[in-house]
Length: 407
Image (spheres, rainbow, N blue to C red):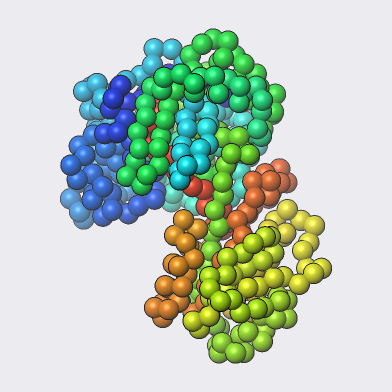
């Protein structure tokens, strides 16, 4: 079974993308989603977050919610807002944020390849989130949220994308956050064949973001019989070359110092880190360097030599901080479940760490150097799992730009 294949995408009719596309379903709460759709009756949030069309106290995991999402999707199709291509295609999808562009390939990825670890993961999934996506896919009979994949940069794929993107786009819209989303259709048989062959020759793809959607697609495919050529045996994804993807830092804040006062805590920090006060924000400049905000003061931390293991997970900056500081000094053994630790995506800036500590909500904040794509792929290749909240990908893919209808 091929690693990927083209598919008949469901996408906004010409000129309608700006009315349709929406942020991913899981980057806002229900109240925020309700605010986002005010004056936007065609927003894809009516499909991806259908509880916004039900009473405020509606259970977001009720049968009625999933049924409403399916109804809203059918309505957009019936009204001609969304159209399905007549033949299987790939699509070029470009994101531009703050002048920086990344161009990916929209495709249908093989569930069997995912099950066989040819589409490699690096995170654990949560059963409740998997169950939610299974029910959404099954009820709507569609995959409406793409999985964010990464492939190693390939000249053949890049050549096709560059040529296609020189032409007229099928959709072009700038979202409220300033990110530009542009889509081109790849329907020339020679281009489709060249892309399939080039990606297949790599042998593997990597999940950057979307582990729950991938796992849910696998479960839906199995429940529907796993027929090799069925649409349900593939899942919606966008794959970007690894040299274009930007990972932002994913930072930590903790509620207390585990019984230590700031002076005693600093005395323990220097056991494994060189520690110097900073005149302003202490942004890490390289791997094994950290910023720390404590008691109104920023500090530069650098891990002392000889402490980085030869292990794809153990050598990650997030692992080193946990092993040498967060667990032994602050007593957090399970960052997945311990309520004393919280995580702040780099898109919010280091000012968010300072704000949460200055407010008294948190006692200390740590700024990390971003995880690299090479590190992510090394962890996935080793069949290991990264610590929680190790990567923050920005910009986000839009829901509604292309969807994948199932059988």
